[in-house]
Image (cartoon, rainbow, N blue to C red; front, side):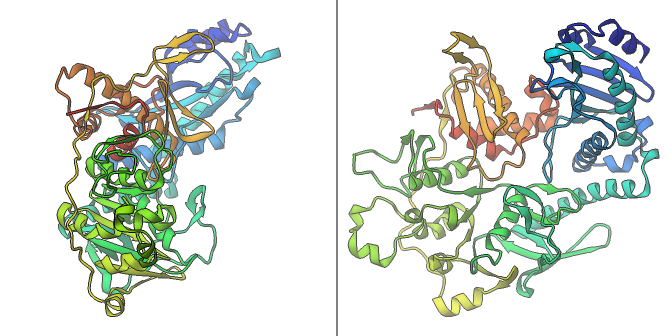
Length: 582
């Protein structure tokens, strides 16, 4: 600590760039501080990265809370959020020029994710955080050592003390930590139950599904929010290891339709199912809403890039002679994009697809009897999804969940039909079968389609050429501050706005470094091209075994792990993507 104080004093009132001399580690009472990455410009974005290290013995967090990977993830999530709360509680913030003189963490969603901000080894816990050291003077070019010392010796010490030392937690904080761990443990039991009983989703009774707003994923603050309750016909009870029982609605494999009037909760239920692939923090309301891990949301996405995808099961050859068994486009239509999204999701390993008619291309979903009277079959290359859903399920074991408010056709195809009525969920399967007749099977089976595209070796070039400045960067991987679902990777702008299950911006940045890691693997693979699924599963296994650090980000501590399905979606939206033609 004295070493750091002396070093700060030696560069006081000097050029701000001299803070790079602070690189290294320093001992404080109870913890060690390290500067990992130092930015020599005040208010820079991204800012500097630092880390604190606390021994597990000194932290004294009970060992039983680390008994599984899921439990460790819960503890890590609790700690980064508690560190964030400590910043809000103890740090003055923005004390210097250009917003410098601040602590921060990566953006945190309502989900518990595998992040590289909190790491454990056998002896210690490490937490990486964002720090902007303070500048002063006209233009902010002078280092304010006095305020920096206050930040580190007083504020950071208080934040670390409140975050890591279990003996300093009050009763409420200790209980909350155990709730984080319990959510993960119970969720793991739900997942095992779902696998044994061929379920694609489970929604616990008393879950609170409505959100704060369309851009705020926190629980709705409205006191009149109705808790979810399962229809009696679909309710199951799950016996938990601790003797408790958890009841809720089970959705089986197959075809499920959710219907109801406008503003009655259809899309709210769908959004909960989309989010159910992740664990949620205590108090979110969706802690025990669990959707099978391979669920992927499918929507129309006009203007996206498509490379060599076999969409022929859904769209026949086009009038201009363009074949659709190896379809490419730089500006896809709503129908061709949705067809490609389905095939690409299946190619990546998903066998649970979710649709909301509000975000689908209507002509891709159905052809009604009136249009059939006007257009002959040979005039319409689109084979509507309605005519293929049973084949997708029976032949390829692809389960699907649809939200429909104006297209009753899909009710004819559904194994399970749900009605949302003023946020109450009813099972109307028997009513639908009574009024619409038995499930409408398909006369013509779905044709086979290729789902084994192979990546060319020279993919994912990270180099960026700034033509205005006549300058080349060897690597550009950057998420956009004002467009949180867009990634700048090399010369490509990868638009992931339509990929609904990205939970937080750090996943976007992680996708960029996954692409860079995949490029390295492709270069080392020799002349044997492999499928997209092969590469993403190989990388996923390595990350699961060794952590996100294997991606070697420029700014460690800023990544959240995406699923392999979002990584595949990013790959498929890269306009420079190259596929090996067989």
